[in-house]
Amino acid sequence: MGSRRIDFVEKRRQLDEDGFCLLENIIDEPMLERMRQVTDEVLAHTDAAHFDAKRSQGSVIPVFGHPGMAELIAYPPLLTALNNLGYADPKWGSGFVISKPPHSPPLFWHQDGRFWDDPACYTTQTLQCFLMIYLVDTTPQNGCLRVIPGSHIRRHALHDILEDAHGEALGRVDDPGNPAYQGAIGEVDVPVRAGDVVMGSAQLLHAAHGNQSDQRRTNITLWYYPAYAAMPESIKAFVAQEGWPDDWVEATRDLLGPLRPVYSGDVPAIRHNRIPGEALK
Image (tube, rainbow, N blue to C red; front, side, top):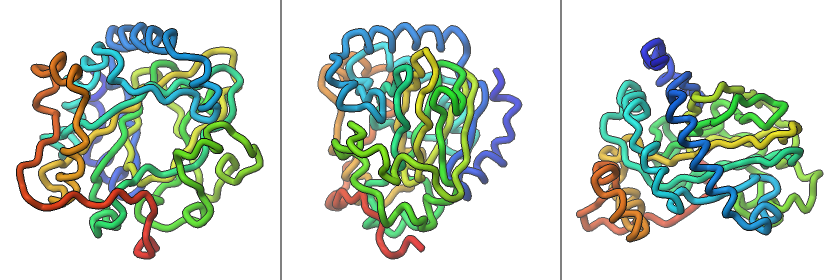
């Protein structure tokens, strides 16, 4: 596997300091083909109204809808990569099929941090991270990721003007002139090859180019808590109470049981807060 050639010390430095890193050639071709089949099934059963409401995102379809996704969530090379980055006991929270149709608009700038009331959010500690697994080669032409390095721990002008990242108007692209869809100071593109994985802090400002190609561009975004044991107690309490659907728990118990967040303490769950405070400077 290509993961043996990765300098994980350097990748961890990038994750801590820049808020993201690219892990090359983690997913092998048989798993890629299996996930292409799974996502094709998922997308074929998705109502057109979903894509109308999510023109900017393309789709945001929970992976809980297909048991085959569990294979990817617990995929050994993926977990080995996390271990090599220093995350020996990660937990998994959720995931989505994010597929941009041909000739679709850009994804808006946003950050997905949810625990901004806790001081840990203003440090390099990665509380929650995305693993974006691309099923096709992806460039600016067909909708690759755009990020603002360091914006997970440093304030950017976008922080003061962005709307709710999950607002319906942004998803529909009611106002194409909104700054959320435009270029931003300090942004960089993250082109990938199929099988690469982009890992990033939930707090990182990120977006994606529009898909100007004639083909669908699909990735599967999985959300992990890479260092769950080291997280503040109040965040662990919040994460554990979110839970997974009962049928998913039953169907994936053996495979995903070790990845399920649990909390047995008595600290109250933190408030859900997506808005960075003044400590982000």
